[in-house]
Length: 236
Image (cartoon, rainbow, N blue to C red; front, side):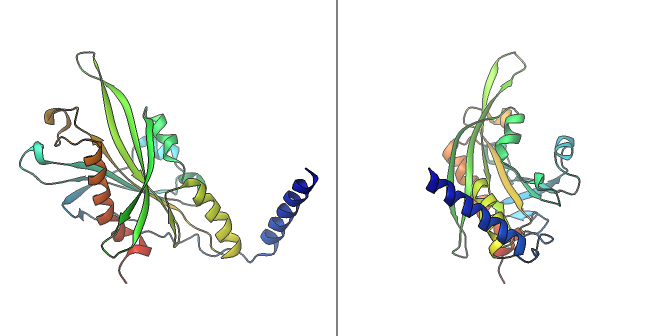
């Protein structure tokens, strides 16, 4: 016990010294993403959407929020897909970037599964993203309840790094500030789509997709979107 306490005390002392004598952190003003989502992404065409009043209320006023609703063209709803994409860029207040489970829970969603996927980009690079399977009940006009399922895919982007883990993001923030003299201005891209295999095309306005098909569709969208706004993935 005494040895552990001594080691912990030594680590705390070293951290304090590093923080005290390290040079002022650079960066923090320029994000690792462009503050825009492309209008066209593969087979999808995106329509700009304003932030909701709730988003404006919850996030600090200098937070940048970019949103688009991406749809595939088609003559009938049986062949159409719909995905919501958003890009949140932190301002001076770190509360802009947080775990999405917090907001999803406030919107009535329950997370039923969480896993990380590796998205292989056309350039050959790999991007790690987190996929949350979520569910909530909606009340129909006849008084019955319908389980609504969806998948929410997100990751965090720093100055020149990215991660699907909020814990790793926090560790990177500390380590890069101390050892690399970099102060990340974090951004938080995400894409979301409903699972429609229990909905009629009239109810959803989309083609029927099960969980696997919905995840595949979202990862394909990420594969197209990410290199168009994430600077570390953009072609020189």
